[in-house]
Image (tube, rainbow, N blue to C red):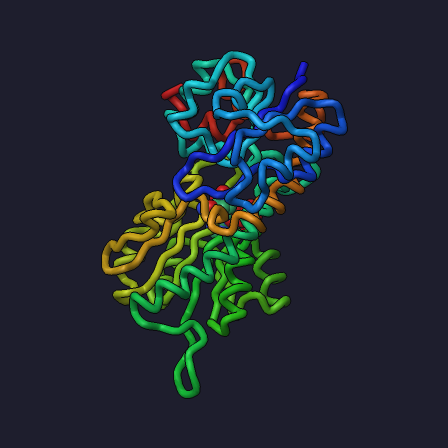
Length: 353
Ligand SMILES: NC(=O)c1ccc[n+]([C@@H]2O[C@H](COP(=O)([O-])OP(=O)(O)OC[C@H]3O[C@@H](n4cnc5c(N)ncnc54)[C@H](O)[C@@H]3O)[C@@H](O)[C@H]2O)c1
């Protein structure tokens, strides 16, 4: 039985979001739950302790107090400094991305945590707890890509009279990819969308979100990437490690100073040369190409992101507190009773477990 819900402050580098805004906390309190908010948890997203107190939350001084609740809800996967709070029967609800996190998975399995992931919850359809953050990450990818192109090849996305616009290639036209394409189109770039889903390509073209489309294959991606100024990776197979669609050779063929943004890096990345970076050290150069691979991109727009995430999470949080077998939590459970129970994660981590 869940009586208390803990809301710890985020501890990942540059992470300024909070999982619940005061209105979501008000709903939980209204349903009879105690909500323990770690002091300052919402401050970087624009929500003060008093805002939470006013709706009935209890402000607790330390992370350990928030983590001692029956159910803990947070944004990012727990960092190693938080693994000591794991215990048998703790119900955890947050982004986990376990296919790319074998050590975290081991810690959850060994401690007997009941771990529910935002990113694999599939009720009523799609991935509704991933979508709001994919939306933000996609829009941001276009902004940071355009920004680093200035320092790199010196190319302006929209071009100028007598000068061709830049070419942006987006691999994976789901929620994040579509928003990235829209952002780049909004800056008047030429945008090529790549996906395995031909219907999605048709739709995006009809809607003017991309200027051209390409069915996904290694050859086709190689050709498109060679002439790209900005490459955005956003392909996802739910729960699984991201498919490596862009090879090192493809990246080596790009013009020096071009830019890569791999949004899918939280699932391991869909670009071979991508490795995770952080807000405090967001880029590196490899093969003459600037790589931006921050694993928590929406953390840089904490107010918008926290509100969007909280609105999506709050109803499912109440379902989880009330009845863990609810159909409305379909697909969310990743680790239970000391085992991985989500197929794609089990396959990705395989023999290690
Ligand atoms: N870095 C961050 O901060 C951040 C934030 C939010 C989301 N994400 C990540 O962004 C990624 C995309 O999320 P989404 O919500 O847009 O997913 P989505 O399911 O909406 O879209 C994924 C798209 O990838 C396509 N795809 C799958 N296999 C492909 C292939 N072989 N070739 C081309 N396309 C392929 C699918 O058809 C789909 O259109 C995920 O890995 C997600 O975790 C990262």
